[in-house]
Image (tube, rainbow, N blue to C red; front, side):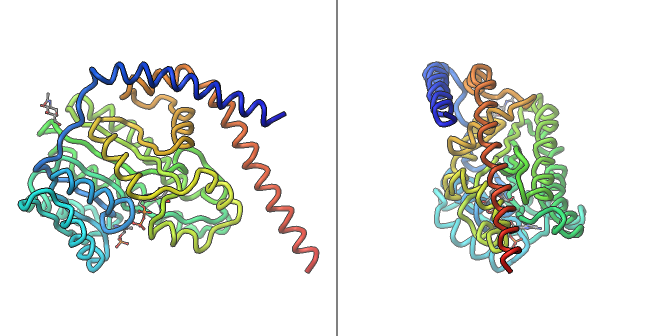
Length: 336
Ligand SMILES: NC(=O)c1ccc[n+]([C@@H]2O[C@H](COP(=O)([O-])OP(=O)(O)OC[C@H]3O[C@@H](n4cnc5c(N)ncnc54)[C@H](OP(=O)(O)O)[C@@H]3O)[C@@H](O)[C@H]2O)c1
Ligand SMILES: *[C@@H]1O[C@H](CO)[C@@H](O)[C@H](O)[C@H]1NC(C)=O
């Protein structure tokens, strides 16, 4: 029975989306072209690995000068050499600025100043530095909660703060935040992590409204599980529940996530997702987020109620996973 309702919902959603997409393509002919990165300076925190490194490669392909920020200088140098190979012209520069995004603000300011001196005024800041820690809330040390907030949220807030006055003055460019699907929906084992990623969305929404009159765009990416060194690290210890729930959205490549994110950012879209589940999730979570795509607005208006119902099925499934894992644990305990 549930499956039939589920199938009907999916079919209806596909039809509604289809109509909106056809209409959207028609509207798309009149939409603004994506901005060019040729000769522009892009700064990427977390640019030495995973999604950040892939984003740096995309920017290099698009003709940008790239500054990379991360802690480990050796990894930064390695990434720099790799990214340079993708540069589309011989004049393009890629430079490294070893900095802890959660460190003192004076250091962050110094990094931005140095990078702008070397590579020119910033056009795009991409806040990709971050990490995940999956554990039940009571098993998460308070120090870990503070660190998650300091790196994932404050790290992005500090860098954005340091670049904004310059960007506003120049009246072009934008800021990118990398949140997570866990930044749209809190799931088992991600209490502390989700809080830090939800925080980014609040920051981004408010910033978008402040920066819009200055011709600046804000984009937030909500990636699903992505095949990166960071993801491998996160998987080393992860509650069974968290793994089962989050893997239902599938595993994506960092190249795909980065490519889509850059495209969305250059088109000025506020939300960036990949995959059908990501799209459904961002639709149902649209809330009061800025309207930057007429097509997305149409899809939201016509499918919001439906997608909420679909989300209820997902949540039902997730709750069942949690209960099942608890029962299995109890069984194991009894048999010991
Ligand atoms: N992979 C996923 O499944 C997934 C899903 C959703 C969201 N995300 C988000 O996407 C972003 C990138 O993740 P990823 O999987 O690509 O991770 P990754 O492969 O571990 O790369 C993380 C990057 O951030 C840097 N970094 C970490 N902590 C830092 C700090 N305190 N200061 C400066 N740089 C720091 C790392 O370099 P150093 O260690 O040398 O500093 C590295 O360059 C993160 O914000 C993550 O939360 C990832
Ligand atoms: C807005 O930015 C774009 C490039 O990002 C630029 O071409 C355009 O001239 C800017 N508009 C204003 C009004 O400054």
